[in-house]
Length: 272
Image 1: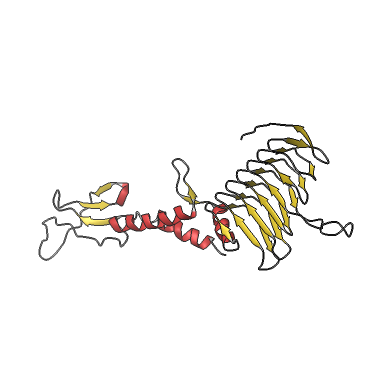
Image 2: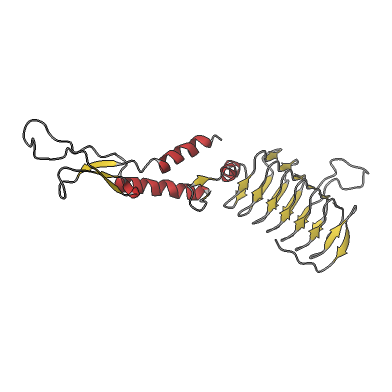
């Protein structure tokens, strides 16, 4: 989806609507021509345009120049409509700066059409990829989710599901591989290079299940380079230390670390 031409056009419309329009102001001084510059104030020119010949010569009547098409009320109306559209996309306005569309929001708009359901304010970093093996898979993303650079979400088998709750952040190069189901709750912080996969991708023994669902609760903090394997349930408020390999369930509000991960603290509370 080519979005940058749209951004350029929007920028021109927003920044180019205050072009001055010219009109004669004969009420105060017929020898002056008023320059009206929209919302940027009013300036007056001291160079009158006089008629040299014919009626009105020497009377100091200023010549009325044509007004621009986008001057005055029409400019403000068009600017407000364009601004409303950009607000729907999402933009930031630094203090004292101009409006600018956030590229991560535009990438989010491009990704939305490939999701089965998606909340507002989705932000997507460069290089993020989504692989759907067939039409029978399901991807749902909540409100204000952030998927940063290099995040990969891959659904391999028919019926596979990935769900990401509101306000969850997936940092750089995090990978989710789903053969059956991976569910991540709301307000989770998942650091970089994390691997979450609900399958071994092959059978070690004939009687072993090849895949099992993964459930990660709300407000879970997962450190860098953590690996979460099939069948794991992580309780609400849990913390998983960097470099851990999680092979069994994590209780709510517990801190786990190590290979394989073991409980090192209970009843923990964390906040950003």
